[in-house]
Length: 357
Image (cartoon, rainbow, N blue to C red; front, side):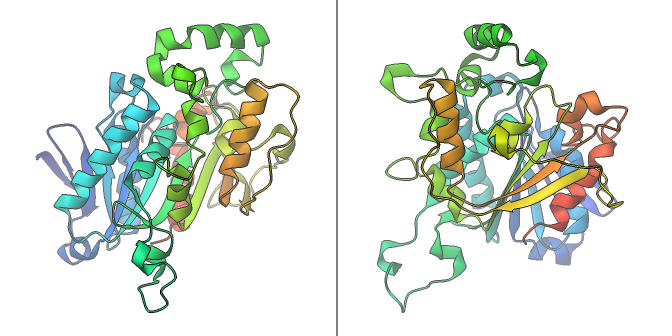
């Protein structure tokens, strides 16, 4: 390891490969911290994108959290595709677990496309309940094992921040295209030239060898594809979304909602969380997809909403409309830069205050 630092009781070290581990400097706290919090950055990002968030987690949960800011998919490696990145992240997480044998619990906090990468990774890290324990009343039926584990650890919180869960192909899913059909068609045709395989996955046009798009495969929960079983293993699933001024990821795709389900919101009256404008708990729903005449992207988006709604979600809507930096909402919500984007700190604090440890 290199570049170890100590600041305000928080220790952090950067590895040669660029990852960051953050933990409490107090020996009694660090020895009892058994909850691995994996933080995943977005496209063209790096481990330092979560520096502020990681430090806040450790400051507020010093005897609980050991934070690992992922590095395996930094910079241009984020263009290699959600599946390739997910495999890398899964391997990285296993390596952390192997060198920290005291870990018992695991959570993920992921920004932007990093949320999709994390969803893929947990599908590869998922271990179903032991067959010999199923239906055996005398076996270990603790919550840790009842829904399976992630990398052998108890799955606690799965949190995404401005993540395009429904992809970026639908109308107004990429707000800077202004919902203009011609612009969206051009973007769909050239996105692979800019963002390579990741762009194809986001725009749902990766139908190689007759297979469905990857995001469609990722709402399956059986056989080799345990993505939904892995999501279900977590005690909580939370989607933080920008209601506006996020020109990269639209509100609908980041909050896993249909247009008709987008709530009306008002300015926050909570001084503690001034940018949280709406919260709701959505129970799991096994309904069939709504009828959609178009067999194209609208139908696929409906299938994604329906599939992801088969597990419960807490949905937290965020607005920076009164901020001078509102046009940087996609970065503000993560506090990507603690100097430039500190206005988003209340979102991080809300995240920690509701965190299951």
